[in-house]
Amino acid sequence: MLVTPIDGVVYYIYIFNMKQIRYHADFFINRLANEWLKNGKIIIGCDLDDTIIPYNEELKKHCKKVVDLILECQKEGIVFLINTARGEQQLEIAKEQVEKLGIEVHGVNQMHPEWGKPYGINGKIYANIFLDDRGGIKSTYWDLSEVLSIVKRERKQTKS
Image (tube, rainbow, N blue to C red):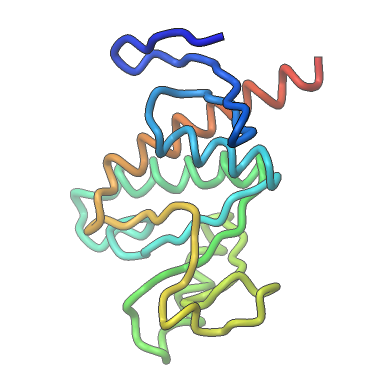
């Protein structure tokens, strides 16, 4: 069944050739939701300073909101990769800082550990979504929040 989206309202459609359920009118939100539900988890790549660790005092509340969202996502299944420009000598300290926030860290500036590629593909780590204060954090925060809501709803319906 196809329901025409109005102003981004959530709608459902089964796309036979892609075997993908349409949860949201936005392509990127829908793709991320499908990846999360299909794989049971997603990979979040995350910057540190002014994204989850406030460097500027005025971003303290913002960083707390991002941390809270990551912690909620963690309950639903994520792989968390730190993706930072901090120097090599600061990476272990960075990991400890993040772990003190309650976030389980699976890698620092490297691919998912199970993939056995320490520096990523051609130097770039893979993640389903990146959170970065210099890379559209407001929109990626909103997208991740939307997807988390979809995942929770779908898992709840599946249990019923």
